[in-house]
View 1 (tube, one colour):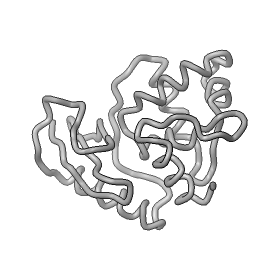
View 2: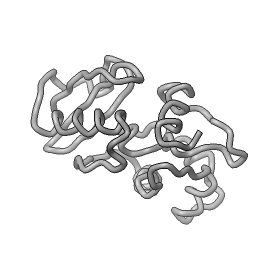
View 3: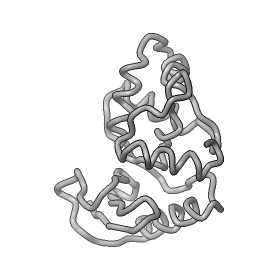
View 4: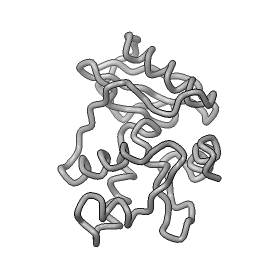
Length: 153
């Protein structure tokens, strides 16, 4: 497992690769994947390039392969997040309905909170039913930055 620290307009990010797929994109300078060793690879360089293009406003979708470890419920939520188009949002209730668990809004929020590949699995596109900016792992200001970048705010 390799990890690479990169700079971005929202501060430092840590990219983590496992078995040829991105398994972590975290805010800050420290990875939660404690067994990852600092390094570089074609996949990490591709991820950095795609993120740079996203922040420049020239990329709307990501092509890097991701590998997400979580419960079956979390996997369903994260898959649903990847189906939210660039420049659009969904509520927690919308996601709960999309995965067939309409009463699980809070659990959807919990799955969003532990999303291991932020931005690429776009949990920032999930907002409150009333349009409010609810919590975000990197801070609400980052969520607002990303939504403004995508032309939502």
